[in-house]
Image (cartoon, rainbow over all chains, first blue to last red):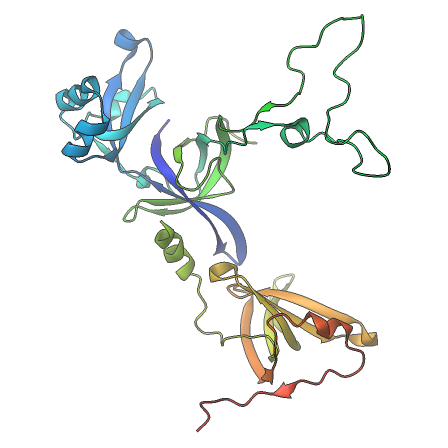
Length: 213
Length: 119
């Protein structure tokens, strides 16, 4: 498992072998390995990577002291964001190593983790694609969700019933996106398909977890 | 932020193609694959719409096909299948989208546009 932190830039079209692909462009890395986690100390194996270097002045302002000390003891410059990537081959990395987008190659499949766009408290039609009712012809049933269960048997509403509620602003993973373009010089990676979140939102790009047949 | 996307799009920019505007009569040569063979097919008509920008720019060409049925075809400007665009006629038009041509019965007449820079 390898991964890198980035920000979503937006979408565009690229042509490859005469075919058009809708791609999401992500500005990812460079990331610095800030800590190695080993099973004997931390109960699991992972590397911790830091993204978006801060100037010292800025770091003092927005980071708390424990975090500043952590960077200091690791011997790297303070960064805005820290994320962990579970990996079994921790030995391949050293604290202070710089990861760039060229850890991925074109044609590879990746998973992209991000936070979906927040839609607030949404009704069942938007949130669960319920049908709703007619808008006119004397209808009194418009955007409601209808029946939510039986009567005296079972005298309750089943857990997980699709109802209105908070929609979006939630961690989402899109699996098996193909990498179509890697530019290590500009720290740019383009994947085939959409990814969660608005432009400028934080993303974690990592190698695919499940192989697709 | 946008600069990186524009940089990617500029790779697919087609500088070999002429500028297409509404009202132009054009002949578009499109690559068509038949089995393993590739050939060129020409499609001629009036540009009634230019839409979008950058790599997503498209234009719509309308012509009257056989049996008098109108045919509209949308071409992506950056599409590698578009081999060549010939401009046959430039017309002076007063709107950006010439949808009214769909309702014109009989022959479509458009005023010729005089190039200002013509020596």
